[in-house]
Image (cartoon, rainbow, N blue to C red):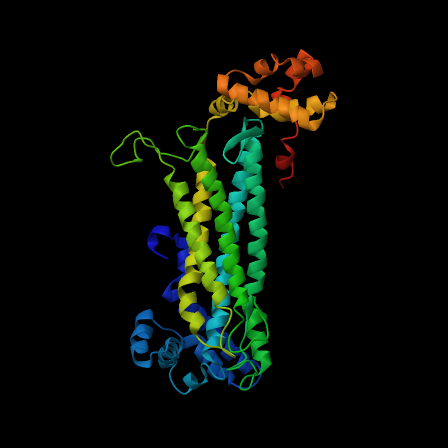
Length: 430
């Protein structure tokens, strides 16, 4: 991932140095495991643990000759170890034993970091939901005024959605927390199965049956968790983008007045650029999932059509998911909310947001639903046309007044009554 969309804690897990260090971790443990079962001399295993090292530059230079990154890695590390002990490095292993197990180790670490970020986001969202639990605003369906809600209820639903993505991510982390050191086609033809268990246990992984490679549905599940998290956060960002529109102006993403510039040409602009950025990056996460699903089908016991793809999509997806989560946490923590504007917009549709209580009151008074609907709709259209309060227009309709008293009609427009159950989503937060 380009530095613009990378944050140091996650990016550090996917550097070339980090990748080779993870390989070395597997190689050293594999040699120790071989010594444990009596295949490798314990003195050689100790020497390998003490001397095994590399530089990225050495491996890159050697790969120009071998045209095989694992072979280049083994050559460089063996040279550091020295003979005769170096001969025992990578003994009985195939490249994927090292690469796939090390990749799982890295992905578990990355998923753990991402989970902590999601937890922090959920904490912020819960706090904001409670802060704005009684702030009334208009609820919109199809972009049109529907019924009253609260901003707290809206944010509570964000928190619940983020919690579901946390559960998906935790499951995906468990799915990818596996390793294999079972040889060229997974039959342990040249390595004792006990070595696989030895290595995986020490890495915090579970040894699983495999071909030459771990099954790629595991990686696809992690990519789905990242894409789902991105889509969820995109939905939050998209909502703020709408609420920040000039005509709405109920919520704004943070803006550092006097420092930040919204436009190179128009000094008045405060654009929702951070939320727009998140919406764009979520598309990349979804696209990476497509590639990850296509990696599941490989020829026979393995091919390497997945390898080049994963070198891009796995680091990029974990980096992007982390970036998007961290950035939206900052937005949610510092967003600017305008309760007065919310109330103003709620009232801007002349009380039409109370049409359903009027409909139900007419039904309770003995009208058929169809007749009641027709009466309410007729007066709603008149309200729009004449731009007058809905309750006033209804009060001039003799058919409505035959069914409802003035007091009954007025009761339909009680905002507190409309919002009396609006805390339920907030109360469900843990």
